[in-house]
Amino acid sequence: MTAAGVALLSGCSSDALQRGFLPGFDDGEVTNQTGRITDMWVGAWEVLLVVGLIVWGLMLWCITVYRKRKDDNQLPVQTRYHMPLEIMYTAVPTIMILTFFFFTDRDMTEIQDTSAEPDLTIQAIGKQWSWDFNYLDSDVYSVGQQESDPSSLGVDDRIEDAPGTAESLPTLYLPVDQRVEFELQSRDVIHSFWVPAFLYKQDMIPGRTNTFQVIPEREGVYAGKCAELCGEFHSGMLFNVAVVSQEEFDEHMDELRELGQTGSIPVEGFSREQSEPTNDAHAEGEES
Image (cartoon, rainbow, N blue to C red):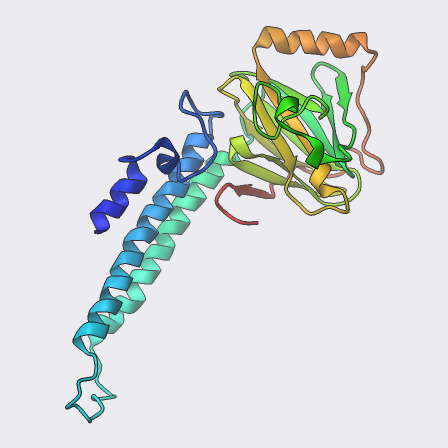
């Protein structure tokens, strides 16, 4: 029974089961980190499934073997101890917690590492209730407008039939196979920058800069949103992420220049030198 459960999660069924029902695609990982995050998520569930089956098995065994019989009117001994069993009750959970901590710390350290030199830096600014993007290396920007009625967005509005995307939403362009560093800032309240397909989200806190790096590896259009309840129209704080070739990315930068969108959009009451980059991050599968 245990082996069958592990086999289901480890790949003997659909691709969705292999990913632990996380977002993903059959033709490759979306970023350089999605494989690591998926392995951490699925591995944790495999261990928990085994533990759960053992615990439930022991419970059912005790209920069956030590159930009260009709001719048994005496209480069992109430003060009996089994020291090896007591030690096991303490040692096994401790080992499990330390093991989970080791692998979580190992993977989160890698996921949140920003020591590498990025190929480009993008400043994402959250605001009630949309997004502005400064392409700092190209010295251009794009401005997002709030989607006032997200419920009106349907299949006809999708870009490349990607769920959650729409032509009317602001679009963040990223070049494929290039290391991108994000500087996340908020203009008003706490927001959270979340691209579900990236399996990663990070908080945006007023007066503070949070950073992370990622290498998009699969071209396509993905949905993005705010993952922090930030006010009345939080549900309309949506955006698209277009991972494109370097040539298409450069063309978009030229289009923004032709529109006169050069320079950077400021964050009111905040300068980039006021704080050191920090990381308030959550890998998918860990609730904030």
